[in-house]
Amino acid sequence: MTIDGKLIEKSETQEVTNSFKKREFVVEYAENPQYPEYLKFELIQTNCQQLDGFNIGDEMSISFNLKGRKWTDPSGTTKYFNSLQAWRLEKKSGAQGAAPETPPPPSDEWMKEDFSSDEDLPF
Image 1 (cartoon, helix red, strand yellow):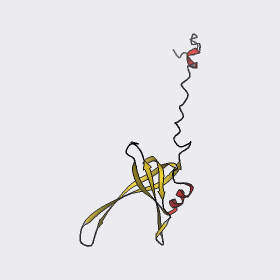
Image 2 (cartoon, rainbow, N blue to C red; image 1 turned 60 degrees about the vertical axis):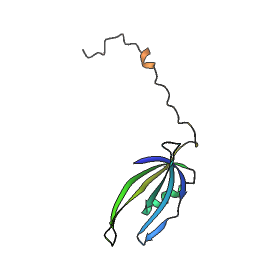
Image 3 (spheres, rainbow, N blue to C red; image 1 turned 30 degrees about the vertical axis):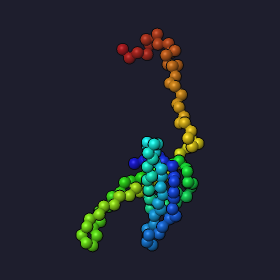
């Protein structure tokens, strides 16, 4: 999955155990600009360093996996947890708020070509 958003918060890398580290960040996702969503993502292991090149306010594209876990506590109650695990971050090009480039209109040059000769027809 991939979404675009604006970086709102970023935390430092946390060493959860000797062999596991993670880093969290929050993105403003404005599919409907009137009601923006604030989504917390996590990066794990070597992906944590990807966030180093970003500043608060940067527009970015986030590729991520939706993860879900089931856990039963000691009393036997089952709980479910979701996380958004990012695996690629890319800066959006262009100035903030700039209109996207419009591709040039298709050319009509082909219409000016002379098709009067039948020499290359297969029948």
